[in-house]
Amino acid sequence: DTEVTQTPKHLVMGMTNKKSLKCEQHMGHRAMYWYKQKAKKPPELMFVYSYEKLSINESVPSRFSPECPNSSLLNLHLHALQPEDSALYLCASSQFRPGLAGGISSYNEQFFGPGTRLTVL
Amino acid sequence: AQKITQTQPGMFVQEKEAVTLDCTYDTSDQSYGLFWYKQPSSGEMIFLIYQGSYDEQNATEGRYSLNFQKARKSANLVISASQLGDSAMYFCAMSLADSWGKLQFGAGTQVVVTP
Image (cartoon, rainbow over all chains, first blue to last red):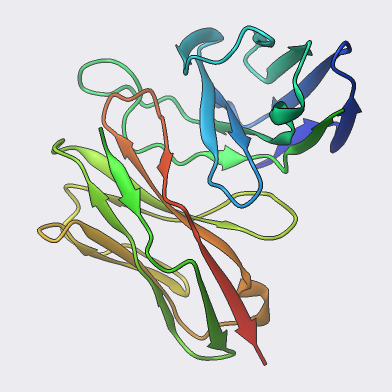
């Protein structure tokens, strides 16, 4: 199975709502990522998990809360979002190939899911 | 900080022709990886090809080849025999060694293949 799945495909939420995005992979990958992509822009990294531990937080506001309950699953909990948070949220996974000085090797083919299109009203 | 530049915002190419998408990068690191991804209008990012900074041969994957010129810091993607299904946004990306897998993307090139 070489697929990353994301649910839901579309999500509309109000600024006071709490919702969660879900990402799942069964490729045995031990690194998982969240990216945010605004319309007509490239994806921007939000979080990196390696071996279920948060390795990178790219200064993301606390209204986004990631969670990695096991090696196959990655969640993104959303609370009190703003309209400017409307975007395509992409999940990705990759093998964890250790770099020479720690971290993840630059050989890092990431497999992406289809994304969740989020609209915040 | 590293930077990826794609200077072609959009281009049209006729079916069955070859097309070259430009990508230049800027980094002082010696160890890095270069990637090309395709994003159709459906949104999913599809991995196409990878080139490591120490690889001496240009990478090829089916109809995709990467023209890697390290001294010029360029990593152009060549798509041979374009097909209508190749219409998509194409992103060049770079990952530095030990950067925890962070992909830095260029702005992208929108390719439209015409019959």
